[in-house]
Length: 157
Image: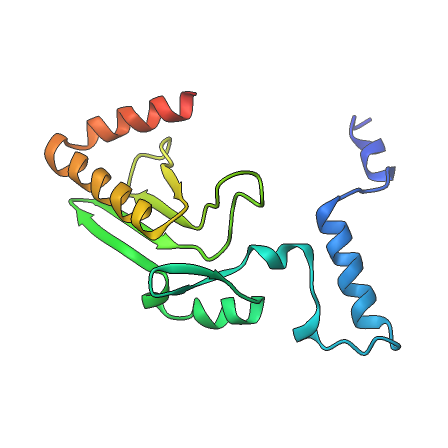
């Protein structure tokens, strides 16, 4: 017998996601509230941002979606160095979810070996740009081995 059979008989508890889904379903099906989809508020709504200049400001899901359609509203910096692409973007979503400093920007190096998936998250445009430039400088001046070593040390912690 498959050891996980009882798993499928247990009630599923998704916590935050279940509560959000229940809330949305109730709002959309309750004929007495007549709430339009634009006015539905969920717990994740407080985590959407758009850029005004280089400053992140709270926004609605609809504003976020409209704003993120343009690469100019997302891309902080991108540098192609040999086979690598160092890309820093504004994600528009606070990945800290209220647990510490905001994480609205992200730097990723594409083209690394399969076992290396580097990602740095940042709170501000200036912090993101500074870290992007630091990574590019390391790769250009010291080569990929140096950045790979730093990534492996970081992920081992």
